[in-house]
Image 1 (cartoon, rainbow, N blue to C red):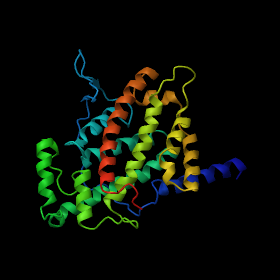
Image 2 (image 1 turned 120 degrees about the horizontal axis):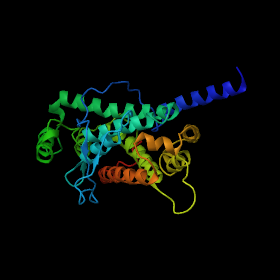
Image 3 (image 1 turned 90 degrees about the vertical axis):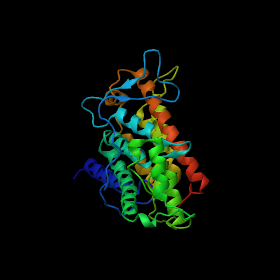
Image 4 (image 1 turned 30 degrees about the vertical axis):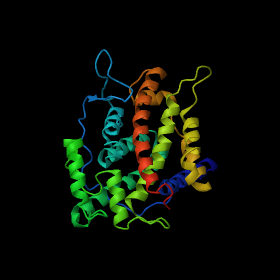
Length: 308
C-alpha cells in the first residue's frame, strides 16, 4: 500500500471515530425510530416567515426540488411547525427537522455524512424515550401530581389539531424537561441517557448548522464568495469546537475539507445564483433561529446548558 493509500485509510478511520464522538460522547443506542415522524404533505408547502412572506402576489410557495433526497421545502415546513404557545417547541416537528438536516449533511458527501450518523442516533434516543413513556403513562406525573399526558393533550388540541395525537411527556421540549426533572432522570453532575442531555447535544449542533447556513447566505459587497469549506470550519470553531476535544476538532476540520463547492449547494436547493440562494437560506436561518432561541430559553431556565 502506497503512502497516499495509507494516508487515505488513516483519514477514513479518523473520521469514523469522529462520527462516534461528534456530539461529545457516543451513546450505545442502536434503536430505530419506533414511532412515526411528524407528517407533512410532500408536495407544495405554504411557507410563511415572521417578517412577512405574504406579499401583494399572495403567499410564497416553495416547490420540491426534483432529484434531491434533501428537500429544503420540507425542512422549512417542519421548522415552522415546531414553535408552540409563546416559548415552547413541539418535539415531533423538531425531530423531523433534524431528519431533513441529516439528509442535507449526507448529501454533502460520505465524510460529512459520517457526522450525521451520531445525530441520527440522538434523535432516535428521544423517540425511543417517547415510546417508552407512552407505554407507561402512569409514570408521567408532574410535581403537582397532575398527569403530564393530560396537559400535553390539551395543549396539542388547542394549538394544532393535527398534533393532538402526539401526547405525553415527550410532546414538547418543556413537557420533556418537566417530566424528566420530576422523575429524577436528569443528573447535573454525571452523564445520563436522558432526553434533556440528548437535546442539549442536538441544540449545540443546530447552532453550528444555523451559523453555517447564515454564512452561506451572505453576499459580500466586494471580493469573492468564500468557499463552503472555509465557512463551515469557521462556524464550527465558534460553536461545537468549544465542546470537543483537540482530537475531535482536528478530525472535524479534515471532514470539512471535503465539502463540495458552492455550485453544488445551488443545485441542491434548485436555485440559479447567490441572490436566490441567499433569500432562501435566510428564511431557513430565521426559522431555525426561532426554534433555537425557544430551546435555549427552556434549557437555560432549568440550568441545563452545561449538562455533562
